[in-house]
Every structure is written in C-alpha cells, then in structure tokens.
Length: 476
Image (cartoon, rainbow, N blue to C red; front, side):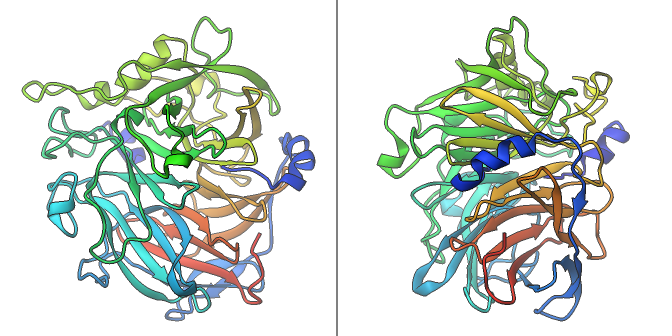
C-alpha cells in the first residue's frame, strides 16, 4: 500500500508452500544470501499494444479496469486499485473482487442507500473475466461507503473480506492527507463481500466492528479453527499482529460473525514489548501467546475529536501495554497448510532506524517475511532482505495453487512482483515498465486453477492486469 506518505514524512506533514514442499522449503528459506534472478523482457499489452510490463518468456497479459472507465453499472471505475481476490464465476467465467484505496469524502460510489457511509468514496468493484481470453466482460460496484480499502483476504466459503486502513470519522481529527472529519461514520473495520452479487445486487455494507477499529492491511482465515488473522499497517508507529475469534466457527456458519474477541500476538515470557522490527537472524524463532484487546472498537468524542495520531494507535497501544509484540508495518498475509505467512514492509532495520514519533517512519529495513504456526505457537523469521535489488518493501503477498510464494513490491526505485523460491532465492516475475515505474504493485491473486494471475498497478490512475502463460499451464 502506498499513500504518498514518504513525501509527507520528508516534508513534515499468506502464504505458504504446498504440502510436498514443506520439508524442503522451510530450511532453505532461512538464507540471507538470496539474489533476485529471472529472465524477463518487455511485452506488449494485448489490449492496445502498449508496453506496460516485463514478463518471463512465454507469458503474456491484458490490462483492463482503468481508473475512470465506465463500468457496466454506469459508475466510473474508482482509482487506487489495491487488494483483490479471484473466484470461480458463473458459466466458467472468473470473478475478481477489487479494493479501491480511496479515502476522500464525497458521494459514495453506486447506490447510496447501500453505503455504509454516504459521504465516503472508497469500496470494492467486482470484475467478470473470460477465463480463456482474459477479456473483461463486465464490472460493477460491490461495496460502497467505505474508506481506504487496502487489502483483505479470501474466505474458505468463497467471499472476500475488504478492510479499511484508517480510523477516520467524525470523532477523529484530519489524517496526514487532511481527510476524515467529513465522514459521517467511524471507519477502520472489516467488511464481507460476496463475488456472486451481480450488478446492483450487493448488500448494504455492514462492518464487523469487534474485529477491530485500527488501520487494517490484510487478513487471512485458518479454515481448521476459524481464527481470522489480521495485519496492521502503521506508518509512523509500531504495529501489532492480531487474531479475531468467535464462539461459532465462521467456516461452519459461512460468514464472519461480529461480537468475537480480538487479540494481539505477544512474545511469550517477555516482560517488555519485543521489537521485532529490528535486525534479527533469519531462522530465529519465538514462542508466542496472545493478549486480549478489551476495547477493540474505540469511539471518541464528536464534539472534541481525537487527533489522528492518537486515534490510530488506540488499539495497538492497549496491546503493547500488555506486552504485545511490535512489528515494522505488517502488510500482506496468507494462511495455508497450517501456517500463516506475512510480510513486514519495513522490517529488518537497525535499532537506530526505529522510532515512534510523527517525524519519521517506524523502521527503515527492506522487508521481512514471517511464518507463524498455530499448532506449535511458533513465530519464525523466514526471510529478510539485505538489498533492495533482492526485495524492496514487500507488501501484498499470496500463494499460487501450486505453492509459489508471490510478493508485490512497494519499492522506491521501480517495482517488481517477486517469487520466493524454496531455495531462499528471489525470482523476478513481473516488472512495472509503465511511464510510472515507481508505482507499486498490489492485489496479486490467482484464479482457482492457477493459470491466471491478477495484479494491479496502484495509483490515482490505476490499472488491473490478467497475466498467463501462452500455453495456459499453471504460472508458478
């Protein structure tokens, strides 16, 4: 996720391997000598012949869903395309639910009667794509009246969880971009979107409030236990890793229920919060447990709104006071084969690079990949970048149906989609070759059969890509 916060600061203003790979992948990943490799070359977009991406030999792509394009429901496509999930659709087609990280106040997109907040322009759109030609067949609003819809996650029952990376609302003073108080409702929640909804069929947006009001980034659900794991993208401050549990298993219920318990990860036995954003040894493991968050859904005074810097830390500070572990910008996460994998975009910095003030970003590392195993309550540092040429600021991540670990970059000098291989090396899969090469990749996901990869280049003028092999074999 990128929101032009680097300029703001300067100016003062899941992942897992498939079962057969587990035994090989984990030891091999504990290497600090990885180098980005992989032959890629510029390819023309099948939509219009323009060069936008570099890909491996034998791969091709088509773009669609650009900001401003008029969708099938008559609504202009919102900007800032971000997290996505891909699903099997009707008649052999694919449906992709796509977040839009829009945060400004204004008339909600689509049907205002279904909006959570009628004066907020964020939400999701659903795209229907031909599974063979990868052409866009239709697109429409599927969630509206939300704000800063960053990433999220897919559920075992086939829905998309869209999350808000903000706590803006009428009870919070303006954020760094001067947005927030004009919103009519408090924000910072999880919402569930059904890809089966057609144009105009989406339900009125309802937040899962007990899953926390904080700057969410991504989430992923353990199908065995029903626990929902959530990352928190704090830019200026340390962030927590969270778990949300309900009495009824959501897999059995077929939906995310409100009224559950939110918890923050803690390093077991620590008397003080352990800062896991600093330099650590790859392969280092921690025994963890969880502390409860007693006030997961804080509300503040509308007559005397709280500052954004204070409001955005209310939930995490409660966890840290109980010994919760601090991380440097946890972002993408994915649960599979009994493990939760997540990135820390700014992990791996020196102790001197860590701060908790509005004057600078928390952490200055190039990124980490962590593995958490619920069965053993073990947290392991699986990968740590030591060079931006290897990996630069990992953000969204996913796993292909065949077990490939795929990571989007939100780097500072050009961006790639990278593949983390079982031997601990990085391979370049996709490079941004548009006239905005520093725009981040976001929302990487795969069709259920693994033959199509979807990804966005996020910007105010964003764009979505479908990528596949010319022989239609699984990608990675």
